[in-house]
Length: 319
Image (cartoon, rainbow, N blue to C red; front, side, top):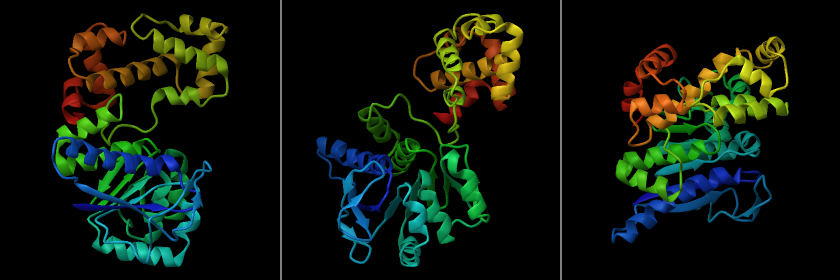
């Protein structure tokens, strides 16, 4: 049985904690439902077993302290606002370095990366974190190769993920290594995930670029585009959705988002095509029609230009 210790500390991000506990816990439930023994022994560990508050106010209590916890095979380091002050605690860092020496895997989720970075264990190695904290992490720890683009990365026994839900993708990747793709797929289905994502996929999908904008007219435009990707769309069509003239729309859009409207539309189409390629049963012709490209040869050209591969090669790599 694999001992999975999950760290708890004040100001932890509760979703990071839940991602690990639910993924590994669901494996045990799935195995026991078919008469097999559980594979993971899950427990929480903290500086104290007294109640601490997560970022969202949820009260949490670790089962073990750093001093009395059992042997740890996989150590999970969730993120949260409390990760940075915890990283500056010499006693915790000494414990982390000691436990890391005997652990098979160390997993950081989101800003849990600060704990690994401060330990020195990732000097010269890649480390993923949430894109919003990547610049700060890199400035604080210049010896670490901060990765702000991929969902998760693996370097030796160090596994790290980007934003909070990317922690689920990371845990599923570990489960697939341990127990195979069928079990990992089963857990993803139990968690009602739309699709399983490879670590190489981007954290920062194109739709978020406009969702991050405070201007409602661009958010409405994005929603309209996503509803009409299968249809022919012109710049004039887009401009009419924002109540701007075509000329003004081109200028404002380029200024706000550092790309032309048609470049953005193509990114949305590529994002949708990549998602459909990871689903079962869709032909290249069907995918082309769903994203408004129609001719599969055009989609192949778009993929080659954007990713340096064909849709089929992309599908084979990520599935």
